[in-house]
Length: 134
Image 1: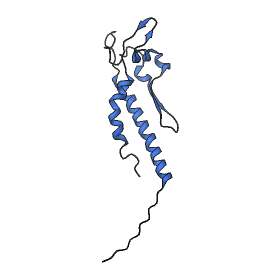
Image 2: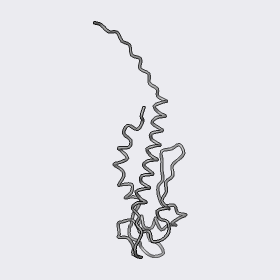
Image 3: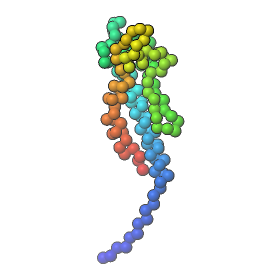
Image 4: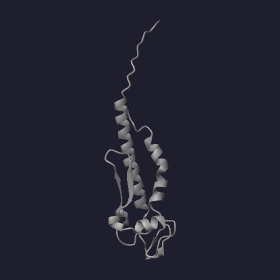
């Protein structure tokens, strides 16, 4: 028995490019949101007026440290910015995040954003698998 078959292979490059762009933007948005949520969850309310231990995120004494964390993305790009909005917490978050000197006082490092990113790096790779969905 002999079977004749013909196969026509058509590469739809533009459709593939659009699918990749959608996947990149969706994955980046999900990653930025995840880092933002992890950072918010890491901030604890202080029970007393004591500072957080060195190396852990600063405590929220009063105000809206959790509410100050936000992310923004480019309209058609693949970049996201995640961090504290200065309009909410001034430069205080940066002082704690990077162990800076302010008003003659050296603050110890109490990072929030860096550890939030590190905790989620493995999840980012998993989210990219099979994300084009064509």
